[in-house]
Amino acid sequence: NAGVTQTPKFQVLKTGQSMTLQCAQDMNHEYMSWYRQDPGMGLRLIHYSVGAGITDQGEVPNGYNVSRSTTEDFPLRLLSAAPSQTSVYFCASSYSGGISGNTIYFGEGSWLTVV
Amino acid sequence: AQSVTQLDSHVSVSEGTPVLLRCNYSSSYSPSLFWYVQHPNKGLQLLLKYTSAATLVKGINGFEAEFKKSETSFHLTKPSAHMSDAAEYFCVVSPKYNNNDMRFGAGTRLTVKP
Image 1 (cartoon, rainbow over the protein chains, first blue to last red):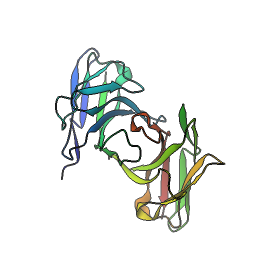
Image 2: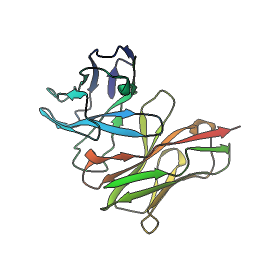
Image 3: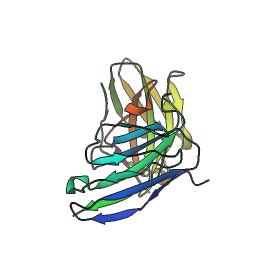
Image 4: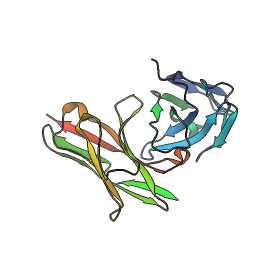
């Protein structure tokens, strides 16, 4: 059982480039989300999805785009990378996000550096 | 609005001694509270959660936490530290019926000395 799989694990981008972080889960979870982790700030929610075809913004959505065409996949797109987007990105999933207390499963992270 | 304050950015203990990681929360409604652990270069793993049942919550690996509404605290404890407990720990608060507004503390790095 793979759980939540993120690719790539490491990426270096130049300012202005675009890229997509991939996320896939094999647990048939309705809820998926993307977080970024910065030193001394914990994790902050970027975007989330409560099911295929439904996405919404989190706490820090600017500069990022998402889509959810299937239950399994939830890619995160950086439209024009900026140094401020240097961070560690985590994808997560759970059963219905509408019920708090459901265990959220995290991927192992993607380290992104924008130069 | 809700927020979490982890009172110590770094805690160092000796193996076999008790662990106390402190967390205070602020929430305008009845919250759910979680502790997650993150080992180096890994994702986050749920240690335990409080949703609305018993105020003393037991988690994996011998950890437990007590929800104290009067003190708005949810401190994480373990009677005896093990070397494998060395990691980053995050306290998290969310509204009881909405995982979409989880707020993470800044984290506490636990070091365990032999």
